[in-house]
Length: 229
Image: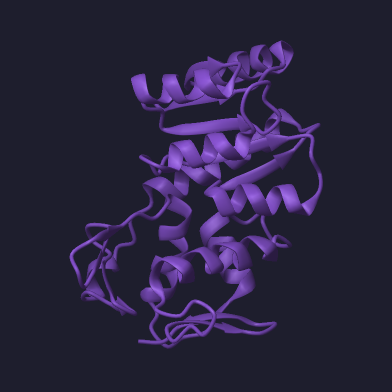
């Protein structure tokens, strides 16, 4: 059973999400503060986190960073902040998706299903790409590990993995923005090209020797992205 940690300081939202998620077979934990969320996640690691940014003790972005210090659990952000800067900050910190309040429960459930699909998807031909390299890093797609030449392991979130895998499994091929959004986030994602920019920037910072002048994770302006071996 998938365990979801819901973090929000609004009792009515916690109650509504707990009822709706449990009705659909999820195991639900709740927390009303960022501190409580971090403690709950450490004590009983969830499979997915639904996180409000406007918490009474910690900013939600701080909670994301705290989680990302030790786990790659998918994180869906809920927030009444509609500004793009807040979305960018949350995605840069390691969030996997962003839902603006007010939201429909059906929309949130669809986002949860999409993130869960990304987490469980194992491409059948992943093993056919033998240890591709990006900069000083070797990527093992079968084991989902990234190792630098000095032996250090680089941690990627599930969404970062999904995007990287899509590119590495098609070396040299242009993957369109629409195709990446469809395959990584789901068919309901057609306009969120800012997600692609944010996650590509994150991957370059982690993997490229010079993120400002990438040699392997290439942007084709207005078209899409490609992996150059």
